[in-house]
Length: 442
Image 1 (tube, rainbow, N blue to C red):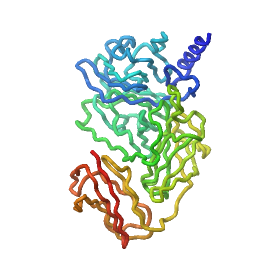
Image 2 (image 1 turned 60 degrees about the vertical axis):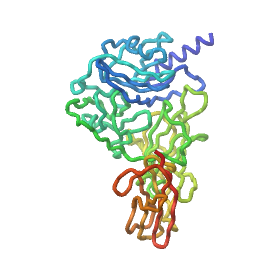
Image 3 (image 1 turned 120 degrees about the vertical axis):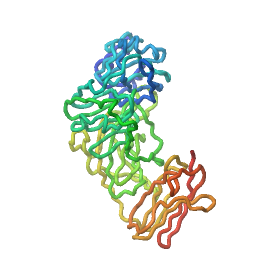
Image 4 (image 1 turned 30 degrees about the vertical axis):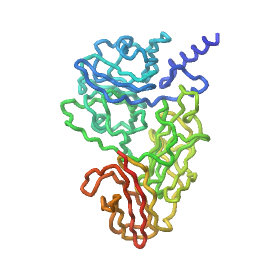
């Protein structure tokens, strides 16, 4: 009777909750969050289809070929030894072990969530889709969509027909395209991957023709630096939320960490007065608590690279990034939430000259170097190799009082990559001189 009850609970959750991600459900942990997906790895074309490498765990996938045989029991044959469950955004499920087939055919306009117990490659045999004559109807709110082009292109190019309605699109890595804030950490949309897109009203997405695509579509991703101080959180759990923190007055290179009462769930680095964080939810498939549960309160802390101190920061204003609604300043975790948080904390001007240790260190391919000036000064920040030879000038000339950050990309003044090794960053500002050691590893 106990086993029968567990099966009924699991079946009810799969069929009734539209975006729940679980398999072999840990009922003690399940909290009903929606799923952000897991972008597939690089795909390859076959003469009559495509190959999509998939990782262990959850993946969000799609195809740009129309399957010869769309029936899932046949289409998923290449991964059937490792496949547990597949579902769409509505909650329709293909779960062969439980003989549940409320989802029975593949649709080329949809993205899908699939759970594997081991890495494998999905082989889809079929005819190429003609994207410009394959419109995809989107409903208001979140949609799990396919990507139909044969080459990777930027989200702006791919989603131009719905640009008036698109609020945000994201993948499972917490990377986003958020045009209202000129944020593109997603970089490119890639064949084989599925995406979650939020539109503010029903519309029709039509991808551009493959023949009209440039031979090389250069991505314009927002430059981001991974946190070094707040680096212990678990990423790529089934649920996530996105928060843009506006932190005017915080120095570039400061880190913002997001916490539940007991756990770090995400972090970001301040650049030009703001930081983008992905907040990771708890994974219902693991025994340990590895993320936030729905409804758990979230607090923010700031780490200052100059003082090497951590302190709590308060949210002065919290806005729903999807609807523009003003929310209570103390947020509670919700899957697929999108927030804009404005902080109260604004430190004063620095009291002295300092050069902070670069981060990350060691690094590859780039590192951030922060310095502060208590008053306007003539500055020279340069990179020197172990032989004492000049490699790169990173900053020169008069700089105002305040906090400053420069990025070194491991190249010399002629934009040539330098070899791995130890380098020195030296700051001269008025009578102040300091040198730090940096390690480049390739």
